[in-house]
Image (cartoon, rainbow, N blue to C red; front, side):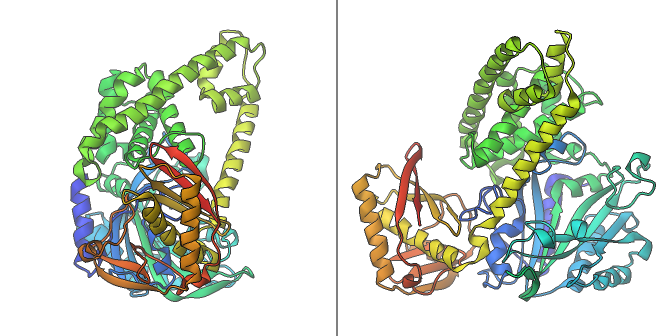
Length: 589
């Protein structure tokens, strides 16, 4: 049974709705108040407080389909199964059902509703570590469900353990995680011996594709390095929508599914080339990277030199290089591909009025990069003897891929030391990974007293900005670590030094007054009628939680918060800077 994109979305939503689950809106790609990761990479990220015991306003059984970005596989994009942007279908139990119900439902969904043959499904379970037992319970459940033992495989923490930081030894204190059980689809392709003598679900030869993962989040990392049981046992299921579509079509190429297929067709038309062996890699990179950039632009992100902006710039520039390899004219062909992306998803994700703005953002970066490439060509003319390191510097500074640099220096009779280039490349990648892991060290997700206090302080700051600068003020985002808070806001009026002093004074007066912080769960429309503030770029479910700081502030939020403002301590605004048209960034500690 081969499903299309819209059929699969409906099957998934109907399945969980009929089993008592409530749908939660997808999060923005950049999560409000969560500096622990650059982008939303799974639906569970907005649920961390609830996985740790907070009560969700929609109850204990939830599901959604979450647009996601993961950058760790960016260098693998170009093969048949890796993308940076994807949609993650997920369901959650927040202390309600656990392994037995979850695994049975997953198998029912995949086989009876999506139509995958049971004989093509393999599963993996956790083999255990000191302090966490081998997951024989899941293995026995799978056997009872009709998965024979020869299609059940045990793996260690590197494969069958999940936390946002990685395996248990990589988890920082207060990080949550647990063992998982994954489902793989067997495409029946012949095993390539270069990947080992024996094929298995986690083999990289292309025969198997992971299509679903049930994580049993039941542990929290303690300061002494041990793992402690959480107060509630949770289920977090994730299934890549495009991967399920590929399995449904029995075709291992994700780029032949959904929106990616439409984009590939647009690239074929623009390049006058077919999607074939020699063109597949650049076409896949263009399709994935441009789609990701469109979704980033839709949320107001701009290419830049830091954090999310740097990733966006890298994606667009890599797209340009691949377009040029296919003899495409980037500024002429990109707008039509962008339109194909927006037309495919329609008003589910896009306001069609945003097309001109998205085009303008991406076209500006393309234009800027083309000028950079011209400068790079001028630099190449100055280089007398090329090395692997110089080739990497050209790649890093000007976006020149190794193949292009090799071709240019081949004309000079020079050969590049590829081993040296890849050594520099790997060194840079390790630095990037270290920086990414460092993102996990702070953040609201650590649930420390300091970060919870800062979280409540952002509500006071939001209201104080409103009081001083006017009613057009709106929150555009925030970022909290144990060291400081950051608050982004829109304001027609530019805040003066005197304004900032007034805002700081109001916030500290409210802290000193010891105002009570309370929460109330009510329908969204009722909450908005009370005047409760909402984060501008976030969609909210029909039932929401409003946090009241006495009669001073009321705001839609998921928590957690202090009980009394005196717990926050003094707040000092250390810097305010302009970051865009009528956009400002405030830092405080």
